[in-house]
Length: 152
Ligand code: RB5
Image 1 (cartoon, rainbow, N blue to C red):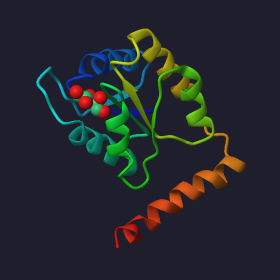
Image 2: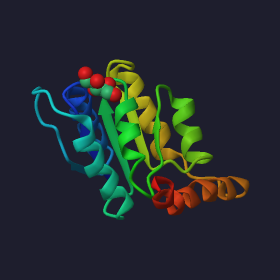
Image 3: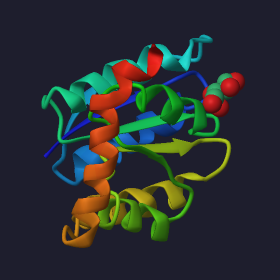
């Protein structure tokens, strides 16, 4: 499994800790940064991770900022991405099982390291259930195709 990761300055410390955690579990990580505490803009990192996932170069994405919210808003602008903000393990599992989410967004100012690891565990071990959920996710996918027309 390949996971693309990214963070801004608010999320970099947690992101770096989660990269270590993922690699210890045998997960291949592609780290798009940021790599230090200097202030940066979260969309610049969200788009790199989102394009890696949408383009098939990563199986899923992990984005960390202060709240996870800005990262999700930016990542969801990329067609094919279903990014979800998650703050506890139950939602992490459900957004995989029912929504086939492919980018996990975590707020470093919302959850601590232990909860973030539990969220990742739930995320990595839960698979999409398909069935009736496939029809609903198909509805989301169809919105990507219609997106260009929305601008007009
Ligand atoms: C940075 O201060 C903060 O706005 C950012 O990390 C994130 O929380 C935005 O959604």
